[in-house]
Image 1: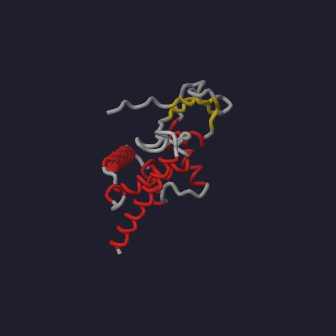
Image 2: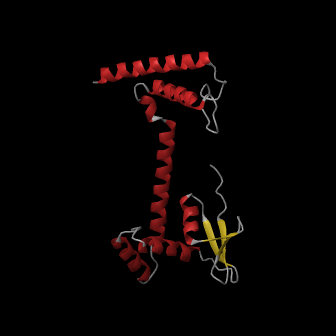
Image 3: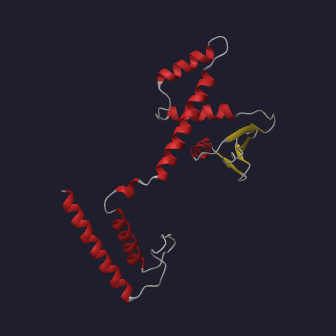
Length: 188
């Protein structure tokens, strides 16, 4: 399992400005929300007192999104959270929420792993022909120069263009197009 990346340390100055210690620049709440969306953990600390302000700022990010009309949490859930936190005694809600999000995160990562292991497009009839046609088209459009695009092995950018090769590509495209048309007509 990969090591967990250290949280991005954000320091809050007395002026209430937030300072990214990695990039040495000031950030906004929207910037912090972007870091979190990208999968980065953050820790927000008051520079003078050393108090951890992370929860306060994360709640503020959610509140700002709610005020913009972006419904982050349903009203029923918000009501339940207020009841759970304002009620007397210890609440199991924080542990329940943590366990629920852990399960969701694990399920999502397993689903992504399964999807990347099996390429669903590879099952489509004529996929290999379409892929070869795309590579030939890219090669024809770029004149055999990748121009910053990375082409798969055997694709654009491997050899300089010449008249004979372009003719072969055109013949290949025509043949592949005919094969695709044949397959499509059989599907009807």
